[in-house]
Each structure stands twice: as structure tokens, then as C-alpha cells.
Image (cartoon, rainbow, N blue to C red; front, top):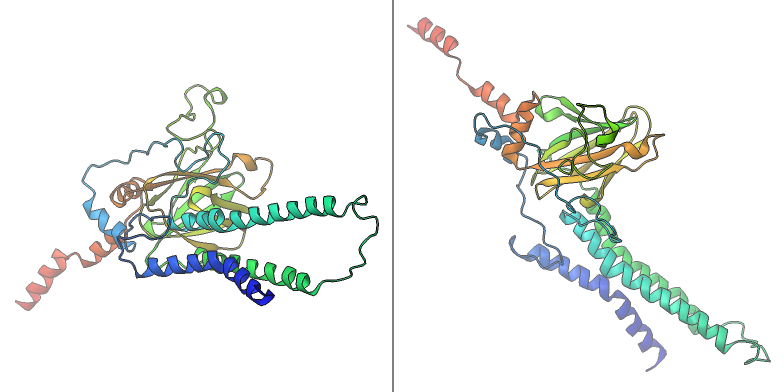
Length: 345
């Protein structure tokens, strides 16, 4: 096999991961909605935020919001684990797949290849084996290979990586549920402009031995130590969310590892990113920007509820569902109707 054939064979092998990725993505797009050909399977979700609005009418009278218990290992760090947290949405699963099936194999092969070269050079070209040092100044074939191969490797990594990057910053649909997360030193406030513009403040829950008698303290149902909060950011599951971040004092960062979400909260600036939580549950994170002395005591707890339960929670907070305003606008006005009828008579 001549040099050109070897080079073409090497190019084909290096581009194989990206070709497989592109082929799987194409199959995923062509497959029916109930079929998944990728190594991850996103849960079915609602088409838009209308599901949340419609759910307000489905919530039974007298229903009350009951905080969801945190599930050990779900949406939180796992004891003695060394891997990423389990990814709970499609975007996180895609990123996890790229890391495990593209980046890690390439890194492993390169590391062992370089290590093997070091051993080979140390043994083959040691002084005892080569009393007369080589006078070689360059080798055209090797110089072409060590330039071309890294370029091809980077191209193979770039194709799925750029695709993931683009998906991470896709805009939320116009009818997404908007939630504004505001960072303070050192707690979070969550504002709901679509539901009456009310705000929920979330502070870290202390341990039982750290609070005065009668004060609330953390339990296992609230979540892990240093991650549980007295109030949670409550959102509907299966509905697109437009999550906006800002800060009142210094730079904070809103990060939920199990949802593959991280967005800086900067004073005087409003950052925005789409978020989808297919599965109901409690998801934990922390401020990931060094924001002062109590930076490590600024956790985030997101509770994703079924839409009808989210509607109940909104009303308990004194807010309103978008359908409430529509219903008031479209409701008949008996007094005005009678007056018009009298004038007509």
C-alpha cells in the first residue's frame, strides 16, 4: 500500500465518529416521533406553554400544593461518583454522548500513542544503542502527517461540538413560560412575569443543630445538605421555559448540572436561555461564580411539576394563570347586556 492510500485510509478512520454522528442525527430527524435511534431517548413533552394555561382549568377546586420530596440520586450529586450527574433532558444526554463516545476515545488513543512514543524514543535512541547520533534534520512524510492528522481530528470533534453549541443557545419559543432568576448576596429570587409578576425568595436551609428551637431546618425530603432551600423555583414539566438571569450586586451564575444548564447572572444585564425539563422532579444546583464570602451557601432547587399542579402552586403564591385574564376579558357582562337590551326596547 503506497503512501497516498495509507493517508486516505487514515482520513476515513478519523472521520468515522463524525460520520456516524451525522448519520444518527439524520435518522433521528426522519424517524417517527415515537422512535429514537440516538443512544438517548428524550421523554415526550408538551408542544408549548398552552398546556400550562389549559391546565389551570383542569386543577380541581380546593387542590393544594404539596412540595415534592427530593429523590436520592435524582437531579443531585451521587456519593463517590466520578462521572457527570445523570442527564435529565435531551440536550444533556447529547452532550454526555459526545463526551463519552467521541472525546474520551480520541483523548485516550492520543495519550497512549504519545506515551508509547516516549518509551520508544527513550529505548530506541538512548546513547548506548546509538553511539553515533542521527544527522536527520527533517522527514517530509512525518511532517505532513503530524500536520494533517491533528487537523482531521479537530474537524471530527468540531462537527458534533458546534451542533451541540448551536442547540444550547437556541431561543425559547414565543409562548414559553418566562422565569427570571435574580442573584443576591447570597440567595436567589425567582420572578414570574407571565403569572402576575410575583417573586419567590429562596435561602439555604440550615441543619437542625444550627437553628433555634422552632425554626425550620433541612430534612432529607428537602434535599442534600448545602443544596436544599426553604423555597424552590417551581416550573411546569414538559413545557419550554425561557429562563432569564440577572443580579442585584455582583456576578453570580445559575447552574443546574443534571439539566446541562449554566448561565451567568450579571448586574445591569439580562441573559436568557431556553430550558426544557421533560420529567417531574426536584433538581439541584449552585451558584458557580465566586460571588463573595458565602458563595458556597447559595444553592438552587428547581421543582418541576405537572402543569395542573403548577397552576395550583401559582394561585397559592397569589399569582394568576394567563387563561384567567383571557376568561375575564371574554366573560359576559350581565349589567351592560341588560342596559343595552333596555335601550333597544
